Length: 279
Ligand code: COA
Figure 1 (cartoon, rainbow, N blue to C red):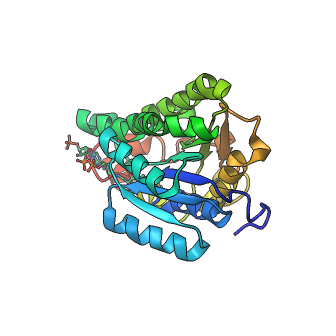
Figure 2 (figure 1 turned 90 degrees about the vertical axis):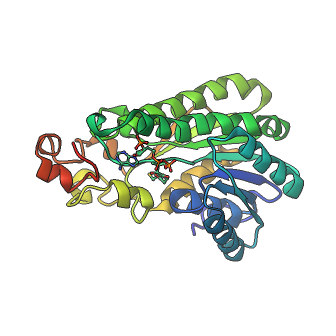
């Protein structure tokens, strides 16, 4: 854990996080709890969620509620918000982190597959905003959206996620402007390649050389994203809203396509090293 931030920074505050069961979301929630916040984590895997909540409580000493829900279902989200208010009495911070991803070219992406990722990422973010906003207004709280950098350029096999995350970024900017006058902030954190995460194990390209691709010489850690989140939720960022905070070791300034180009698009043997489905 970083000792840069005060341990009691978020004492008395409550975090509501979609997608906090594993990876970046888990570390982010853990660090908010380690700095005093109580938290709700939300996801579809009820058993895994309960295990993560127990681990988070043990590691931090703060309280964690596991709320099994699908962000695509507004009624389930609202029930999770109600349970949070019943247990903790308030919501100060919201992390919109629930996301779905896999590698597939447009030719191999069914209409349902494209829609599924937009429903999880973009509509899921909207549903989360709708369910939490009345409470976040009360506390003059803040939103943080876990997005990506891939949609800043064209990236093969990521049409669905590029469209979905562009929508998330846009929603964050709109809510910053609409809700700013009520004291509510909204920012985006955009992680580059973060090691030891489900995202990298699903999406990583075999042979990816982080030293050649990232100015700071290595993949990031989940802690790097959590550090940015702590700053953006803290009073140090009280005049920061509608922004995207890229945490990628400088990768976006170096980025090629990631996958071998154009062989990954044209040669089925090369594609098979990256994709589950067909070109
Ligand atoms: N390539 C192409 N299409 C794929 C795919 C792949 N690797 N994986 C799933 N799909 C398609 C399915 O075939 C289905 O389309 P179809 O009905 O036309 O066949 C569609 O996507 C929906 O899949 P399904 O498994 O029914 O959806 P789900 O709601 O159970 O799961 C996913 C959602 C697909 C996003 C799944 O990957 C998931 O649950 N991810 C959560 C974890 C995650 O991705 N975290 C992000 C890490 S960065």
